[in-house]
Every structure is written in C-alpha cells, then in structure tokens.
Length: 241
Image 1 (cartoon, helix red, strand yellow):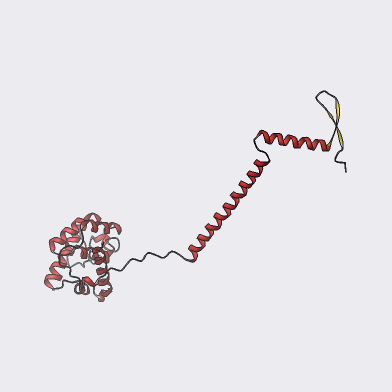
Image 2 (spheres, rainbow, N blue to C red):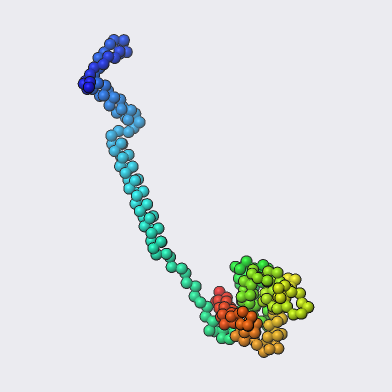
C-alpha cells in the first residue's frame, strides 16, 4: 500500500514541476470546502442548526402520526354515540280525532313532502286547503299518505296518484285494484271526501283508533295497531316541530 504522504508530480502555473504529498492535497481540499461553505453563508454553526432543525421536523412528524393513529384507534374501539331522537308523546292525542282545525301549516307539509322526495310536493297547498274545506286536520291526510306509499314514492300510488291507496269500485278507473286519478290534487280531494262522508258521517268513526281497523284491516295483511301508532307518532312529531 502506498504511504499517506506519497508525493506526486504536479506542474504549477509557471510551468515548473512541483512535488505535492497526499496529506497536503487533503488539507487543500478541506480549505476549499470551508471556503465554498463560507461563500454560501453556511458554516459549522449553520450546519449544526440545519441538523437540529431536521431532527425537530422528524420528531414532530412522528408525534403527529402517533396522535393520528391514537384517534383512529379510539374511533374504532369506541364509535360515536348516535343522537337519540325522542319519541313523540302521543298520549295527548288520545284516540286522535281527525276532525278539527289544522295542526300543521303549508310550509311544514311541503318540507315533509320534500324530505320524502314526494312527487306531490307541489300540492302542499291543496293538501292543506282541501282539509280545511272538509273540516279534517291535514296532518292526518299527510300521515296516511306516508303510511300508504311513503308520500307517493312507492307502490301503486306512483301510477294512481292516490294518497291513501283507496280500493276502486266497479266501473271506476283503477290500477292493480286501486282507484286511479288524473292528478295528485284529485287523489287528495277524494281521500278527504272518503274520510268525511263515509267514515265520519256515515259510519260515525272520527278517530284514528276507530278508523284504521276499518281502513286497513288485519284481514288485508295489515297491522292496525302498528298503523295507528305510526300515524300518531307522525302527527305528534309534526305538532312539536
């Protein structure tokens, strides 16, 4: 192996031959590096500061990652508690008479219909006005509409324009056995007529407790008790809105 201070020949700027040792070459290289660092404004202290800054960034990144993982683990192990929606108080409704002044307004009717994406949303005013004309609380018509077809978005009602899935009589326009109307307004008007003329006046049934077992009997694959409970909860909830 060659010695560290092995000399080598080099021709200087004057053309004279000079002998320079390996150790001298290394010293010259270090001096050149220091001069370049000073030229860029980076000395020993600057290098040290950059090193400390880099370490700080790495430490902060590790802390942030650890906290992120901790929060994710907590969400997985303890999912957030869902907001509990209180059950409307239906006791005050009693048997729930459908006869009376409106307990909801047009704006609420429209909001409910829009929430269900109902095709009858533009008939909110008609649903209100026709109820007043018959002396029937519009809240119950809206509740039946939701119970029977999710406000016109499901089943035969999408074709029949019927808010209450009223069975067709002989000779009446029908679809799958249900009375068919030309418009949603016609279907709304006929539901109020049916409740007012047949149930209230002819049969003497004016409450939800009395109307539903006849309107949606268990013999027709219905659950009258569940039907009554849902209608009351809907109406009670809207009155508290």
